[in-house]
Length: 452
Ligand SMILES: Nc1nc2c(ncn2[C@@H]2O[C@H](COP(=O)(O)OP(=O)(O)OP(=O)(O)O)[C@@H](O)[C@H]2O)c(=O)[nH]1
Image (cartoon, rainbow, N blue to C red; front, side, top):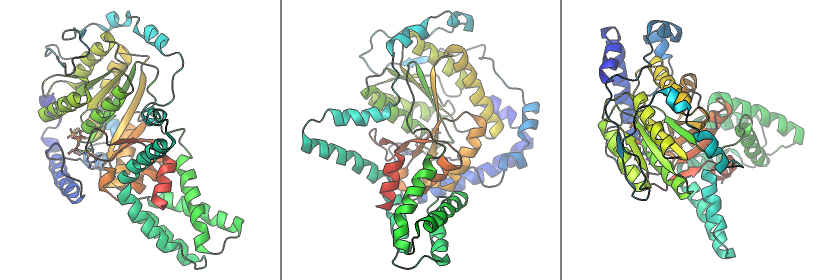
């Protein structure tokens, strides 16, 4: 696989690679500056930030040209490595030996889908939120219930603390006892743009605010604060049906995509743990085969979460790993299969080809699987995260975002344009490096928090 990439990027593209190296350096510097606590896995973060300029089109070729010029490799390599099915937990003793590769015809014959459908007659709409609910349900005592609710809220607040402190401080300086005038709108615009809400969404919000202020006959800026809060929530929800992870009925697949260093592997581990708490059977497919350390890192997470990791050696074809991994999930009736993909793809064409290839394997092997494609983003990159949503939306059918490292940044305002401009729901937020530091995203809680 590595050689294949090497061949693809012949001398013609050396200049691009040099530029990418510069971007990597710049991005590593940014991550260092981002006040993130000491990472569990000490490794070099090589984030390929997507710059404002239309990098891929300018430097290489247009997508259309690229598709014409590139031969999309779809076949599974002839000589395959025997997949390593790493058994981390001992509770599921019926584990099959290393999965045998079958033809697609053979797989079509398996009546797995019907069996699993029977298991869940009424699909639940939410999953990760259920973990929170369960926590509340298990609490009978009034006082304890109050404490549990508070602790859930506190955990979320802790995660958005930097954004909250920054935004609420700035916003309170705008809402005074002064009369509403042009200066007020200008100051508000500045605070919102600085808070990573982005120019376009900020303008929309301010235009609505202006209209409502006139309608309601408000004169003092302080009276407009509640209105702004209301409008931000409305705008955030305008194109969003809900913020839940939809992973029922089983079998379900959750594929994590995103550039490297944004927390994909960590999120895989955290999610696997949460799903296990829900009583689901879970497997993780290590399709990030570019880095041996990524596979090892995932194995550590697998051990913590108590789930199986299906992997092959470094450099294997990710599509082949997915092929084998899905075999394992089918045979073992796995409820949720998480696929950790690589972000180290040098341009959008390669990214598309790779993700399409994986998607085709999924469609063939588990055509009726419930599917979530979650884009992992690093919140510390602010508006760059928004650009990554734009880019990845063209490469894959993204169903939601996992905004990670929210605990280390004041740039959480980017959630608002992700939902409004890109129409993609933020479904989960990473608020730390431990296995518990993953929270379902609740727009209302978020807006309340940043205005607190
Ligand atoms: N503070 C904080 N750190 C996080 C969070 N999520 C991930 N990290 C850290 O970010 C770093 C990168 O995380 P990974 O999970 O390795 O990222 P990745 O996207 O899988 O990276 P590649 O394997 O290189 O593609 C690690 O040091 C993680 O511990 C989070 O929510 N908060």
